[in-house]
Image (cartoon, rainbow, N blue to C red; front, side, top):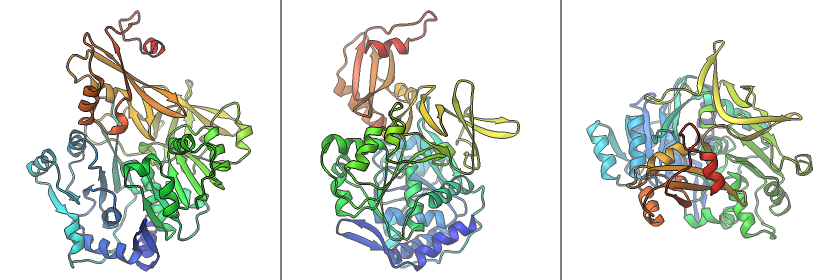
Length: 482
């Protein structure tokens, strides 16, 4: 653990390279290190403490993240774009020791923090000050919590997932061995920090003396090509539906970028999208990864090739491949994937029962809920055995969404499911109500409850849901009827 962090610190401290590029805005590694030292003037007083970072995306966000991690504390990302209620639920679970923010926080969050004597510090004021303290090498123990991220929970409350140094560093070491990075790359930062794909680009970027290139505006995220080109991105990471959207808008064009490596994860990676990467985007190295927040980002990988288009033609999509070193797997009689090894989380925060984490013969196994199938020497993920799905790369419990929808007056019950449309998962909600409800009113309510990706794109009205012989809602029948 110590050598890993030592290399991070040494790279940041010694490099003169470009660290951040967003069109005309550029920052270099000496400025990153200077700001880390300024933040360390505050954070050196804490040790393995939970530090919440409530910020938008900017160069100073990266200063905050590495300032927290290199001071030997635990980073907890909070997204100001999330609804207040969602962030409040996450704060209540995490109970941070300190909150760093670049903006005025909503009153509900401030009230909670004040009531619990949790200090709030303006991170901008820290970076403007002249106070600083040199980073000293802490112990960085294997079982110390490095970061905490949140996943969707079936009760309507998010689940906090702590990850230790030992959990996530194995993944980074594997990626650095597998992917042929060069020095001074430009890494895309497309998704939110709270989506654990961020662990990939945060650490691999610094370890290769490279630059971060964020996507900040909504229009950039809707159609990212101009950002890719203008910022000279060479390493791309995202869920496959982002590439699918580019394909739908520019199906026959050649996309002239400098991207040479593509890191794909989080959703089924269909062969027609892989073909587009080769034919239209001229990407030479494409990798498909599979993993879960609870299992240290990624546990499987597949190095794609042009031959995959024919080899897996009958399957229609790319395999998740083979397990990464340090990950042991089992497949149950009903084909559920179980993962063990050094990357498994110690357990959820708070009172969440670790129902997915079980001991078998004194070994901790994580029950993924994913159905897998082996084909030749690689594995394919065939979908879920429960109500959990992937939306925009985020793993989401449908019961979580339903729990919030059922808060709405006049809705007796709700059933959510996804329909695949143009290689994208479309979230649909069937509602049971004696009244016909206005769809825009439903969306307006949910905007204050849930992140954007968890809000259904379509609502279907039922006066009464079909039930099975046991009196339970017949979800399969509802989906067939819709």
